[in-house]
Length: 344
Ligand code: PEP
Ligand code: MN
Image (cartoon, rainbow, N blue to C red; front, side):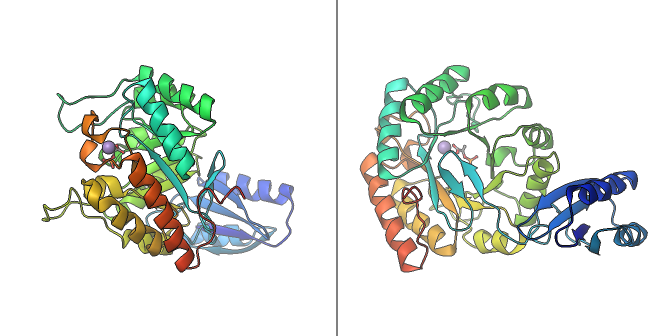
């Protein structure tokens, strides 16, 4: 349930209400808004508890949250949340783009692509060091060596990085190097991993599982939020269907669904949905038109030589062109604050 405090109550009251919530066997999550503070009281919804909380000093009213996810719900947080990563911001009023190769392969190729995507307007560099491959015989990523290459580029270009963690035992290691921790589609329901990254202080990019419903995806976000990490960026990356012309089917409808039901920012990955570079730009533009808070796009200096997902990687030129088109679409629908302009 949500405990809405009276306007202007001081820290002492907030703390005493939170303490009472704890005494009642619930977990308090305080959210301070511009005008008032609300406290999510997470646990079993019971009328008697709600009545007791409603009678406390400083409490205006108590609202039950009927949904299975609580902290991720828009009822808990009416305004859209903004998650900041370096100079980039994911959430209302911004369109930010993460771009880079599927996997980190070698320092020179990574640096070349990082420079290209940064100068085209990407604000975060992506690159996998731990790759969740469908086949155990495919390239699995360079591990810590790859993280070091990302860290070098980060330092040289002053660009934040986003990289995936696939295993609970690597969370601490990845956390030490990255600015954004990516949870891949295949790990969306690895609850131990979600809990572990929820204990870090880093923004988490949570991809939607290929067969997950939007509500299941939001429940996964809830695992992270319930650990105290409220910096979750959702990412739609396509779902399974009978269609074989694309790798996955981009579910554009996930964007308005998330926006209606959750306060969390949602971005779109057109690359893994398309599976083919020729379709990536169209899907990216559709995502921006639908209201996505940003994109994550695979780009490679030489896609034909990529060790992973080369067929969907954009060339540097294609990416620069995509960024220009995004600006046009954003402007056409009245979304002004787009990537690279965020700094102006
Ligand atoms: C990736 O981003 O390279 C990746 C493996 O994506 P997904 O988890 O969406 O398949
Ligand atoms: Mn990939």
